Image (cartoon, rainbow, N blue to C red; front, side, top):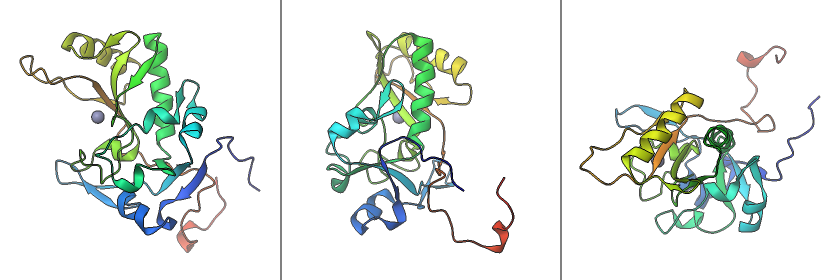
Length: 211
Ligand SMILES: [Zn+2]
């Protein structure tokens, strides 16, 4: 028997069964190479978002709506600039992590444009960016503080290390290089497979009672 379905109102989409134009840009179960040349397996399952209204009204955690993770611009692949839009299921885990950061900071945490989910075909993606897994966020503002100084970025990076010890933050650029305007946080190449996902074809290897 299966238990009650989660209450999230988004359709769970098997990326491998989406239309070709989506498969070509989401690359479900595809491979991206990281900077060390290591292959990383992309997510297969996505939540489907029908409209901005739905994105604004649907929360992945108490304070983070889907809308916060899908602000992209013309650099995103054309099929993903109109609805339905797709986010990897692991985006929900990122939302939980950001909730902890929000608690620790005691105020709003803002994700920048192109700072949530970016598809593997997003123009700014080169190689295996965790943004393609839905597990990375570029935070440009916390409460009234803009993260555009070394001091502000370093302060919040240290809070992240405290409350999210397994998360990764991008090291600061050298002091003279004033290009930092956000704090990048990611959970790594996490792939989330919700229970209601189709899964793989049954094989002898999988025999036995589920735990
Ligand atoms: Zn980033």
